[in-house]
Length: 571
Image (cartoon, rainbow, N blue to C red; front, side):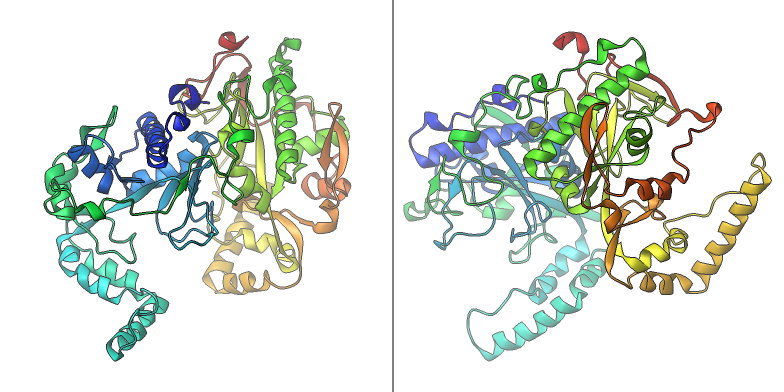
């Protein structure tokens, strides 16, 4: 975990003027974004008033109160995924997913300690604090650029400000285009031919878009902004003139005021769930000493054994205890699942040959957990939200070598799997098997080398696949799967749709000892395990006692990954 507090200290209280305090916070935020973008090769550049300030003032426009940057759409999407885990605890990534109240179609990075008075004088529902705007840039053809005014004209902009017959007719027409969904079709039709322009035209609903030739932006140059250099368009003169005209001339004195907000209170907590209190939540270091969940609270006993598998199990047990502490702190529900639950019942701990740990969470709690910042976790634990289509909590000191995974290309260390479960209708439980045969499922291949029993099953699956998907039965099955009360749970993973558990099997949860740790388990774990493993109390034959095609585990050897840590540097 990167200690941004030591790299870029928060010096907002070194100033007394609110605007200077705001610009101090913004500059620190911009440096952190720049650090993350460089680390992950994400392309961005200064935009709008920030670029103008860099050229005309070598820093902030003296009265400016925000920062604007742009990213190509591909980089914009990557940044959203990576920022979730890379941003420090005191910055908030504001998207439509993380804050449903947000009114704008682009993302912002927010400071969690400050408050901005809304220009309307009202308290808004989103986190209204000091922010950086991040705009996505899409590519467009010359035909689109020449006809963009048509799209702009038919965009729905809400009720007209003046009650005239012309405005009323225009409102009816634009509202029709809005509810019919025709605007994106027009945009797709217009955007044909060579894409040689960049613009944020598709991201703005109420502003006239600007179009920039690619050669005006790339290759990016570097420009000084305050005490640091940041990426900027190579021909920033043409870029700025298309936005501001004679951009080197200062506006009249009466217009030299902040445009985006009212008063700023730099250490006042905003009434929002993501806001923090400067006096009680501020951490002056995010090292292991001051992590929210201190590693010292969970001793690392991996060296108590000399067997690599047992060492891995001791690491996973520690990860489970940390995960439990975080869930308790945030009021999140989880329970043991799969082989881990089986081990708790049959062995009072790990299955002796098991090398991973499985837990489940209701989908709503899973999403809350997913959005937790990395700063919520100890320095030696990695909150992995990007490697798979489910979450993992990883140890930073170790390495696993598995068939099919390169530990030096992806972060493959000792982990626990965290699966989402969603509530579904009773009809889906009845039709679970047929639902599995609907795409994205693909029928199994039939090849030499498998026994006759498996071959017959695969032939049957293929036949059913074609019958269901080429006769229209798939639509009927989907409809019938929505029949009945929502009283069962299923993994929110396509490959596991055939497992469905009645609500009464899971809740209320009970506690069961797992390696002397009281872990939550389903209320009726007997039926739960019978559903997954049938005769679960009977161990498998000796030759089947292996797991996950694991080749070897190195509990104190790190992966070749930027998030990995060396054991000897910390112990």
